[in-house]
Length: 104
Picture 1 (cartoon, helix red, strand yellow):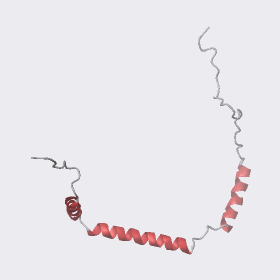
Picture 2 (cartoon, helix red, strand yellow):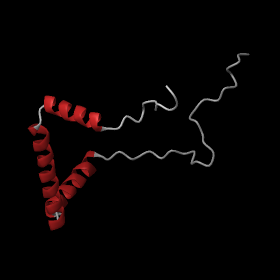
Picture 3 (cartoon, helix red, strand yellow):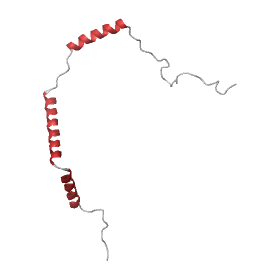
């Protein structure tokens, strides 16, 4: 008698779940063609919803902001950006230094 004879085979069954898995039915070619022709005719009559004036205005404002951001970035060279960054660092107070307290 092998140690593996008592092992149950099959899918894992979870508590409270439906133990029977329902499989989808496959369509035959004639059904597939008829549903395809029905759906194609309905898509020609249904149009995508058009954007509202507010949506168009919002997209235009976003586009303008992005163009402005790109122009601003392109105006400064890498050397200028590094110099500006170093200047800002020099202006900061050095709060991490050990304060000189006491005699000497």
